[in-house]
Image (cartoon, rainbow, N blue to C red; front, top):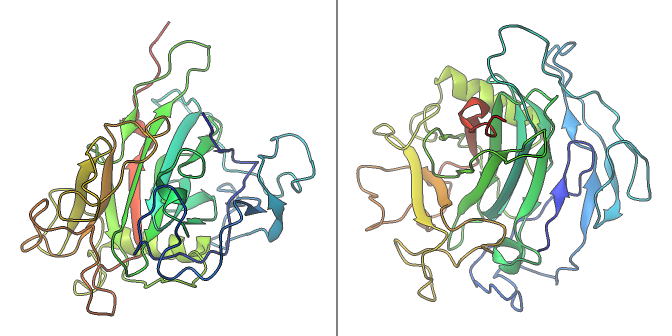
Amino acid sequence: MRTRRRSAWGLMLVSSLVPAACGSEDPGGDATTSSTTSASTGSSASTSPTTVDPSTSTGDVASTGPGPTSTSAVDSTTVGSDGPGPIFDLGRIPDSPGNSIVPTDIDAVLTADNAYAFGYGTEDEMLNYFGGVAATLAAEIFSCATGPEQYLVPAEDVAEYLYIVSYADQATTQGVIGQFRRLSDTGGMDGDVLYTGDEGWEVCATGVDYNSGDPTPSLMVVNEQIALCNAGMTDPTTTSGGWVDAVGTSIGALAVGETNETPYAGGPQPGNEFPLVCQTLVDPEARWMWFNWDPDDIMWPAQSPFIYPGGGGNPMHDFMVFRLAAEVLPPPPAG
């Protein structure tokens, strides 16, 4: 099984990305999508993660510059050919009797149609941000060889909330899918897996339009939008009006779609939008997520918020920020 693990120190994700339309789904990866202008080389640019030290942060955001091209992770304690080691201190979980959860490393596996970035931090801000990933071939979304990415959230980092930032390409389909689990720190059994689409997920549609050719949203932009989402005072005609779950409101809801075991009918249609993602990386129980911008009229699976509605502008109100409180991740069994 091929996995691409990204630790908080060793990062192999692009920080300036060109998302591609998945107008031509090709899980084998032989055909490019409708907006692709050059073939994928299989390599990706390397950067150190963008981080904020919560003990000294005043709201300013520090970021690292681009690094060399690499296809192998950087060890967390060494400097190798893939680039420098950490430049910024990561947020650490303070020693406090108020912490009710014994932290352990968190393993995350994610993929998206088309572009996403992963990060974690507090309810108020993301402290660690893994740049972004944009698919230019369908194989980069669905296949075992070049599809889902794997991340490691160290136990000592502040990870009260896990975040997924995502935006689409105004063509065909859009969504995110993946899974999370707490790893045993004693060599025993890991915690139960929690999937995208499970209870606990929320989404905020920011209405800040990112499209093909745009770099992924910066950490500063993301944190500005998290603050607006928390305030819930954004324009109800162009955003979700704050965080919403699957119940939602009249202006939006978290869209939870098909599982990763739904046979693909050969082309996107409501209720059956996506090919299967590599099941050795993403379990069959995982479900696709997106934002439903019109819950009164778009009722999945009869209608689909996972299919681009057309019409120009930004009807889906992306980019999206998904979040999950890390405390809902099941701990490893005791003993």
